Length: 115
Image (cartoon, rainbow, N blue to C red; front, top):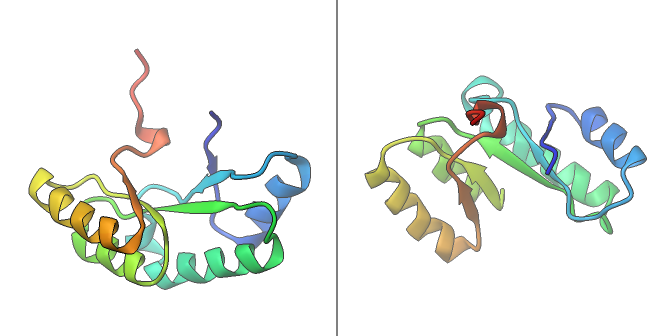
């Protein structure tokens, strides 16, 4: 599976214009919640959903090890986040995610180790 890194609406729209599949996942840059802020990506997800309602494109916001930002992202409506913090915090966040219908990834594709 390809991991497309996006930061702007144009990044997403450009990829969607050449891809024919639906249900694409787009990844924020590593630690983007700390760099750009949760609201940036929450609004980006809203814009993408409004502009491409039939494509079911999801943006995965990377929150690094920041549990507070991961929680805020889910509360803002982001349904897939990436959290690489402590296992204790991950368990707490997964409980919240279950209640909100969200998913938590534990590894950003750009940080994956090649075997």
